[in-house]
Image 1 (cartoon, rainbow, N blue to C red):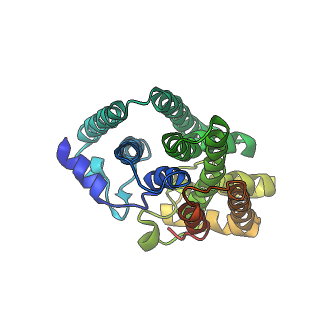
Image 2 (image 1 turned 90 degrees about the vertical axis):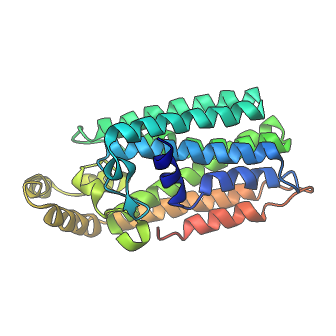
Image 3 (image 1 turned 30 degrees about the horizontal axis):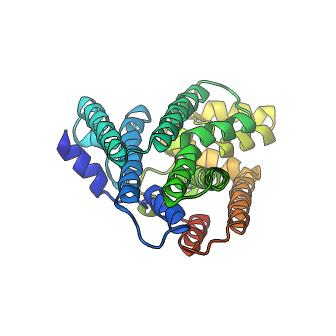
Length: 293
């Protein structure tokens, strides 16, 4: 079980979540403490735990350009390795010994599971409202980013009001992040994104991009889309991408993601710190807004 854990952690990734823990802490403190490093590690390990299980549920062959754990080993090994990684997370949080952070972590983890369940449930539905979809990605993706900022702020000594504002900032960042992730899943490049392009389309995932396209096309086009799913994956992906572009859904989704990014940058203006600095957090938000992977 330990080899697959080392494998997935060694695949790299952007490490956005632990960086956000440290960035929020840096708003209030100049030097990192052992406790904030423990929380940053726990957040990244928890994220990878969810990936181990998500990849099985999504039948994903690639993660960060490499074979997923359930492909390289098997489903049972991936499940058990994920469970063990989750135990490691709680050990790190227990070492920190902050009950408020542990309580917030459990609340976040519960919401994340609910979001993942809704994501899978949406696949079986013919139509999903974009309001429902945004609430789902808030749970599945944004709450972990919100927790990362809030936990870092709490350890840094932030007031309850400021730590909650940072949580809300993390939610805006997370919504932008997931909208761009959905976009890149369909319109990115495999070499940059590190996974099969068009997987969401083949799985008929009701992403914002899909929902927006579906709401903009007429009944005959909807019937064409249903018919194309009898063809090969390559034909399905090409056809759906064309309709996403022609309908305007592609550009609309990118614009919405950029709106959430602008909201995040505006939110940063409200933080005036004398002890630390917000440059690190600003760089993270700007990097996410221009990402291609």
